[in-house]
Image (cartoon, rainbow, N blue to C red):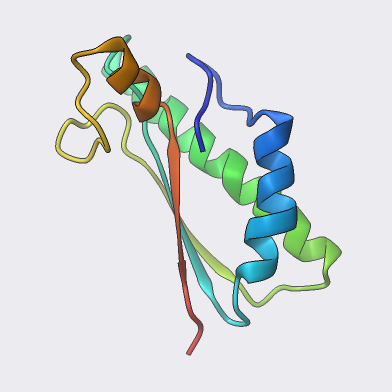
Length: 112
């Protein structure tokens, strides 16, 4: 999921996608791993906090969708990596790369 510059609130299209497409695919007893990222513009601490806020935004959306379905069987792992160049999905040299680093990555692990 991509986020606007300096924003931690998902656009409605992404919220709808998480609610209608992603959440129903989470298996019973599954685990959702959510990693937030930012570009390298701005203060490192602020970017780390922003990336965590983005990841928690995704968690909130999925949790609300699960709750509406009466599910409490999913666990979450949420981390914000900020602008960490070793963990960034893309380089940060070009504007396009920075755009794509303003993201949250979701992994869904099957239950046992």
